[in-house]
Length: 120
Image (cartoon, rainbow, N blue to C red):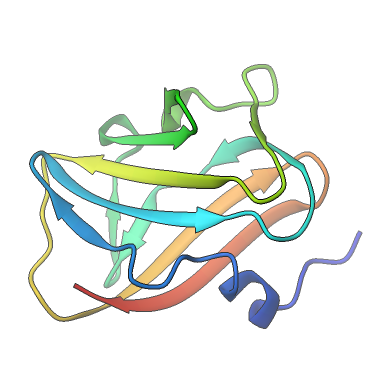
């Protein structure tokens, strides 16, 4: 199955969701396409820096899972219109504009690379 165009993937990112938290930083994506199954997560990149999966978690609704544990055998349901929050512990970001790359693998489409910019 061919990949989705970049302009469609950019619409998944919740603009303005990038925020520093008490323990790090977080951002969100919203599934506006179709129900999906996340089977893998690559390290989040901000301004060219990769953040380890060990410090990253993925939360949809009340369910939170360490990003490194998401796999084909421990997949994550991502319903239509659901919002997933990606949290990175132990790191905060400086105020200003940031380039973000979110890469997830889905059972339905394969790898989705979401490249966006947001301001903190």
